[in-house]
Image (cartoon, rainbow, N blue to C red; front, top):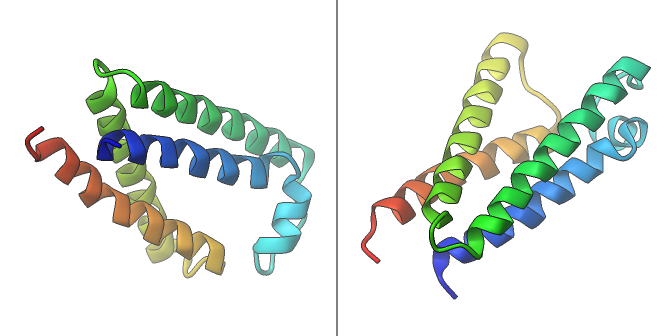
Amino acid sequence: MNLKKALLIFSFFTICIIAFLYGLSPRWFFETFLLDSQPPSVDQSHILRAVMMLYVALGLFWLWSAFSDKYRDTGILVLCIFCGDLVARRILSMIVDGMPSPLLVLYIAMELSLVPVCVWLLLREG
């Protein structure tokens, strides 16, 4: 299987799992994974569910890109920009706000590792 296609399919499943973890039941997510946090308010739950659907929509684009020769590189580029932006904002938050919960540190590692992989895939021949 093409490496770009495999990464896009993997990214689709990963982003959907992450989105559903916190979007389907924000209260459960906060209680289970986030240290020293209050249960989310109605407004916070609303925002998390909206972001969940944005992530699912982006994941669907990656899945579609995986099966489209025309848009495969675009899918990889969008994945690179998405992960790069998230990791930059998370690192800024760590500097300003301090260390987050372990799960969020794992997200930083995942996002940070994908950026050079995406760049490599875009720059290599074939």
